[in-house]
Length: 144
Image (cartoon, rainbow, N blue to C red; front, side, top):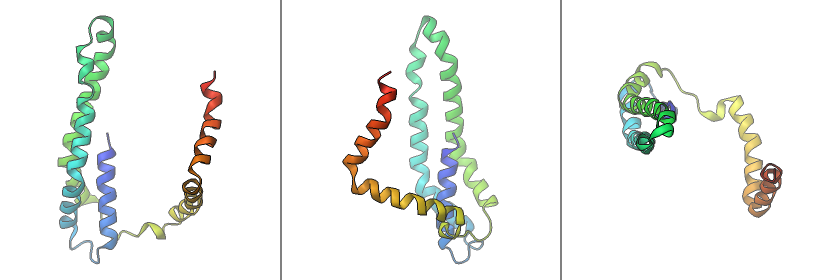
């Protein structure tokens, strides 16, 4: 439910990294980022909300069992959808402050990237071997 806010903040961080004077153009950057990623986030949350509608046609024991879950999930996702396009942009404008440092300057990110890049290169170089290795790892759990 907070994925939309995370994506919007990440988009704003990316944009503010490159901004020479982030405090001067803050609200302009907020508007650009939200208009860029907002529609896709809205529709993805709306699809998740609508995906639970078939549960409402269940009857008898299944209906009594799953309808409370469907109501709760539908209301929560609908609220998250509305908040992601109304409240989150305003809060981003007020709370994301100061100079945003690039990811490459963060030592934790550099360490993770240093681990990830060689593994990614290996997997891309040997895709069939990767699939076989993954199947070998998963096979004992599938054969129970």
